[in-house]
Length: 257
Ligand code: SAH
Image (tube, rainbow, N blue to C red; front, side, top):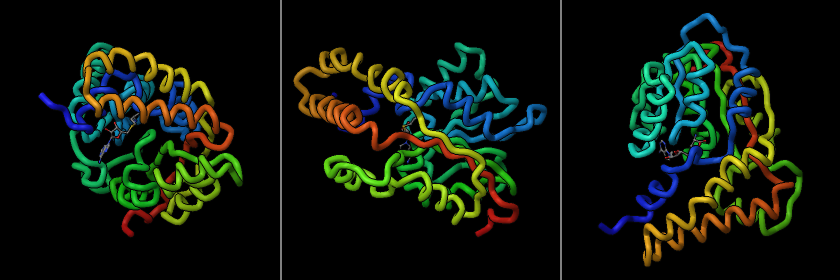
């Protein structure tokens, strides 16, 4: 069977513990900033959950029912396996859906979580669309690529402007949250370990096996080239960008607009 580029991408990433930078430490730090009630059974959606590293962490640490939502069934199958292996299957319901067509009821969620995925809709568009699924006063936890300095070298500026033009500083991202009717509850930047150990080094460790599995396939070689280039840019320019974790609470009555 000839695999498409997208199928190859899913095939490469399904074996990863994560599909983007992050760590349980970051997830727990974000949870802590939200000061969620411990005694209430919360309704939570994890959007763009991938194979669910953060979903499992949330399930372990929250009294909650979690909807784990992703476009790719391969990731969700993996998530279900991992959840069952950890005895967390009861708390998590996977839903294959696109993040811009959520199969959920409006005003039904206490918390929307999304690590490294809202960029696929655009930070502003994602927040605007997702907020109608939150109960009044509901909470939002998003990680998103963020400039960490006011200026940066042209090579990295140009790379990100063409890859994702909504990349911006934390102040600009928080302004978007405020424009959308949210009040900021906390912010922090992911450290280097969350990029290197959990994501890039874990990816690099799979390159050889992936290339061997898809021998001769130019698209597979190209995929690995792209991964290598992304990693090179991160290592060269990590002083200028990271993921920011944004915690916010919907102001009352703002979920209708
Ligand atoms: N939250 C995970 C995965 C982040 S990568 C982590 O941090 O490890 C982004 C995820 O968004 C991938 O799992 C990808 O399959 C998913 N995705 C891509 N397009 C999507 C869409 N339109 N709707 C829902 N999920 C999507």
